[in-house]
Amino acid sequence: MTLPPLPLMASNGKPLVEILDLRLDFGSGDHAVRALDGVSLSIAPGETVCLVGESGCGKSVSALSILRLIPNPPGKIVGGEVWFEDQDILKADEDEIRHIRGNRIAMVFQEPMTSLNPVLTIGRQLTEALELHLKMDRSAANRRAVELLEMVGIPEAGSRLNDYPHQFSGGMRQRVMIAMALSCNPKLLLADEPTTALDVTIQAQILEIMARLSKELGTAVIIITHNLGVVARYADRVNVMYAGRVVETASAKELYANPRHPYTLGLLRSVPRLDESRKEKLEPIEGLPPDLAHMPPGCSFFARCRFRVDKCQAERPPLMLVAEKHMAACWEWERLGPEMLKAPAQPATIDTEVEAETPAVSAVQEGV
Image (spheres, rainbow, N blue to C red):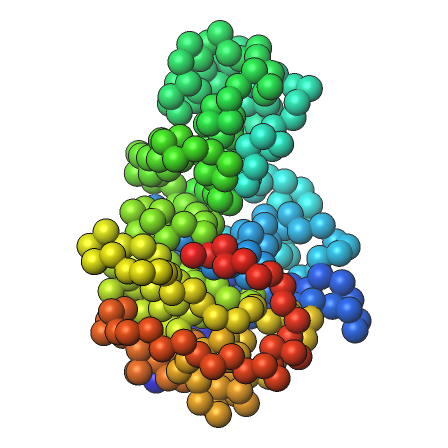
């Protein structure tokens, strides 16, 4: 059954955020690249949703578009809607969007080493939003800043307010970023690969802090990640993206048990599992992503897919309801399922003609 062009409803009630048919280009005219091509997704209050996919698939651009942080030029939103608490953010004026940023919607950016201002103290960077959005005086803002640093596990917080970013380790800087993002008790937190460049033990600590604070404060969270382990542990729901489109969406439990898109299946089969016998080697996804400036007319995954049929090359599949609250954009979704996770590998015969028409964006499968 094909879903009508309506919003993808959140899994637990009325959505806090709805992105509807969002389209965004970089460049213009013959040189335009469609970075987002009809993205629709939603998130409910208190829900944790993960966006997963290869580099360049549109994960970060989707999050930045919610706060209208894509610089124009080169980026331009050419269609769609972004609804937050019954307001279309794309139609908000500059004063309205400034009131939303850092207050009702906050973001933890990808690189903690460069996200903080190196010439301002940690205390000043924490208190600025408190004074601006919550109208606190300097003394109250400093007290709140100390509470926030303690909340994210920074020892001797009161003595660290006058320190500068270079006096903190990478993990501590990311904790400060989380404290800043949560300072005004936002309704939505966007976390763009929040554990990038951190070691494994610090990654786990940062993610546990975010999960705990989300539950305590009732904050909805969108986590952008390549790490399928993070998805399995922390996500309520998952949106798999490929070439600027959402190709599958489901609860984390349903997605891992019953993948219905060949790209999702490929991601899961390329990850080592402790509950299975050791294999000789992992199974990569053959081929390369398409060139976003010259997208094929049908399914964007056609050239790499081992389930493809003629219809896939000619006609783009819409998101279709394949199970309760589970949607996939694949004409052949009925051929996929739990049994394919353990089936012997049958690599696709890569369509060299399609590959030649769509030059590689990257030869590295960072999404696995």
